Image 1 (cartoon, rainbow, N blue to C red):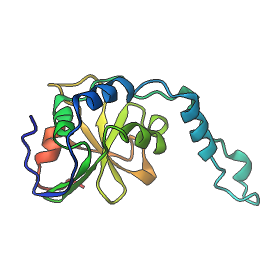
Image 2: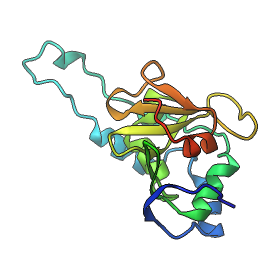
Image 3: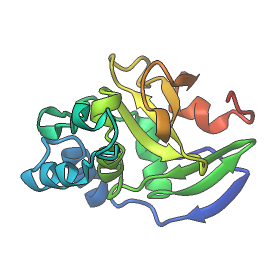
Image 4: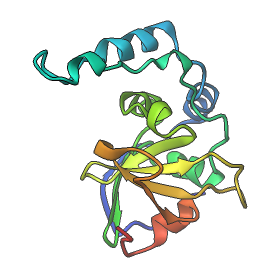
Length: 178
């Protein structure tokens, strides 16, 4: 049962049902579909004008080899979904725009996380373009993953920072580390 009290509940949604959670856990990290691969490929556009010396060097991303992590979410995160399936909350300086069970996979693919940060799973944003992510590169410790924080415009392990040792620590700390 979710026991954290957020100082501010801007948007609280109905809880995810058992069926929604089961479907989510069974599908969030399955192999990319042909449609998903096609949609990602269609978004790949050369950012350089033809007059640029970099135009011919552009290589579009190839999502065919992308894989979402196969780790299981911490129980604490599942408890949040049972409390509110997504939503916007705040504790101290930390703002959370949690993805719901329907959007998490789509958001991770839209931000191309399997390309830039394989092993990371974005579960929320802060309203300023920053992602909160589970670092699933290693096995869980005490049923939790470290929490990473990275900006959408510079996704990468060299550009992010660890802001909490667990999901619960992230949600309960009242100060920002960024």
